[in-house]
Image (cartoon, rainbow, N blue to C red):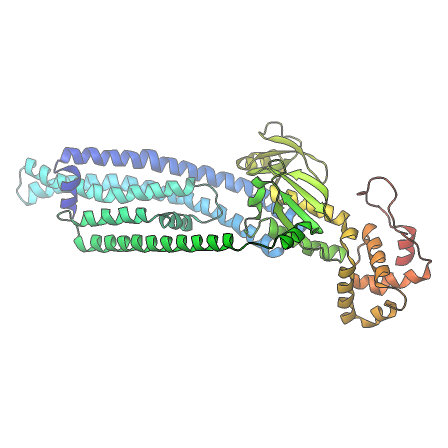
Length: 487
């Protein structure tokens, strides 16, 4: 095989083989291997430097209730795996570099040893030994250097790839299987290699047949999938929706709603840490803190919103608006002037910040800034608005469901109050008062402690009403009514 490969690739000329070999060595050793080694070193250094900031960001999200313990452990494992990956690639680049050097040494040894064997053992003259063993040496060098070059190129591709969510093996396989033409060309190339005299016929024919079969099978699957999609689209267009039902659906007012500009719909991609998953964690956090279950949050796009803008509605009324540019991170700190980006104001706490490109995260963290992803910004804003409007979200039906839940745990507490002393509407008003005054209370505690004092006082239309002024302002102390009720 070495002799055949040498004759085919270099045309039987040792000079041409030496030139081709030197070109491959220069490309592998000087260009690919050196660059991959440098990228791996820099990537490992920056990754290790950014680890404390990433760990602090995970702890902050966990303490804020934006993620669960399981999600926090998963993110910590991902950070650790990323550091291990770049550390391992830094060491692996040394192996690739050593393989390039070893290839050069091996071909020199083969060249010198081959001439010595031809002249000293076989009695060949120097010219014949140089021609015969030199050609074999060039063929062996090319056979060994081409796989080494492929490995070096693969190393460079791995260490220089973008930090995507999907692993590279799955990405490469999906792209390879995306078009049957790639498999077709590879199969034909393998069959052509089998037809070269001196090359192993059976292995190349088997590989070529497998690739050609895969190409044909993939083409049939794609054709079947396209036909199914066309049939589904045709069925969708043929089935007309009832206009009255569609109108009633549009007229329905959702308790909590998030409107996204068209360029922000990627935030609800369905990943484990997307907007929908974070909203589910937020509902659980609010339920534990306030004792109520907020309604499901509806998320939809709105073409009327400016680019990179979101809006939060409570009962159909806009309660807040902010921006979350795609591909950007929010940096909060005192030394952001040197960073490129767009200045902004954090919507909840009113802090001055700047939307910076995602690749500038490490530079921002090095200045001492707190870097927050755009989903966390939106969820924090939503948490603030929902907490401020919790009383408005507590409906009569919610109170009934909560009351039935308490009845199963403590039936005496419920039967003592409802319906003898209080109606369901009065229970709703009391619970809304506790929520408006930000009194931490669960529904069970309200029934067993707070509600039993209400009938002792004369009824009041709104004894817990907020003073005039800013409707979103919160009281720092409970009112006298609640203070007497809590004693």
